[in-house]
Length: 407
Image 1: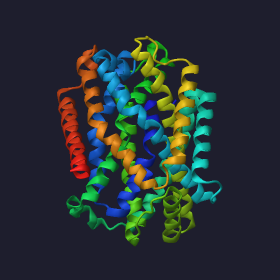
Image 2: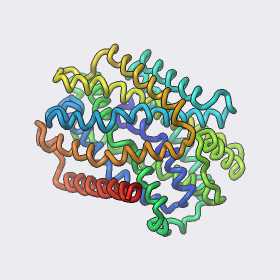
Image 3: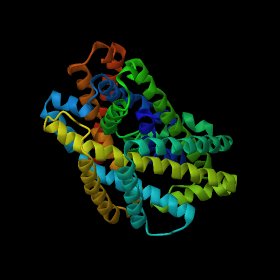
Image 4: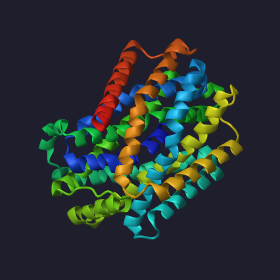
């Protein structure tokens, strides 16, 4: 089995990479590579805390929130669950846009996006975690290979002098875009919760004597996280080499952006590169949609179980199915009502997730420092300082977003 680390990667390499990282490269060249790397570094401790708690307690972060107090669990639910259908709608629209660009306008984007969500749900309802794990591993293999080859082809076209261009720091629109970029980079902060649930589910399949040491669990997450961060840089390079090099601005609708990207690769590097770019894009979004649907169909019933102080967080198949129907239904509604300006809508969603990120990161920090855990599962002094610095920086950026938007 690939495990929760690679499921995290499958969930991550979606709109944050294909759309936002590519847009960053298209608009600013290589200038925002350092921002992408810093965003990943800032979020790493909070995500790792989900692995640490799940490994040590064989329960998810939701149990940790409940032990902090109902206020913590309530804060998570209020900050995250209302955004879930909107996030799914954005993912489905991006996937539908890519399919339309590759295969032609088969159906309107909302209709095709709805069918994609229904197909992902059926796959998960019929196959469960094991199918999710296997499909994710296969799709990631296509993704990594095609992305690396395409990036290597683009490298000579990148204007590397833009790395030292910091004029964007004086532009309000650029600073707001950076908040949107960081919101999903590499994943929204709330994905730490489904990451911990995936870890619990994966450990349940292991015999007790095969339960890994905490260091092994951390390493099994660290390397997929590094790969996720590296892929984000690759997509930024792809945007810089193809779109920024030709001074072409990304369009705002999902099929238009996807078609623009694939066609630019075809014009600049030939049909072979366009095919690779299309494979990479479809692999990216397929893994993300499937992983995202599973993530929150697990999270909602697990949160209800934690609220009710029930011991079994995994929940029943019926609870999973009901969550799936409810959230998919709301996501389809969002697809038909909120998709007229895709990139504007996406920036809103990703910015909203970043604004709540410092709150969720702080909750995760409290869980691993205050809840009952063995000493080996608690963060070292260096990791604690790293986490607190990250929370402070994210809070400052969230404050900057409010000042620039409403000030």
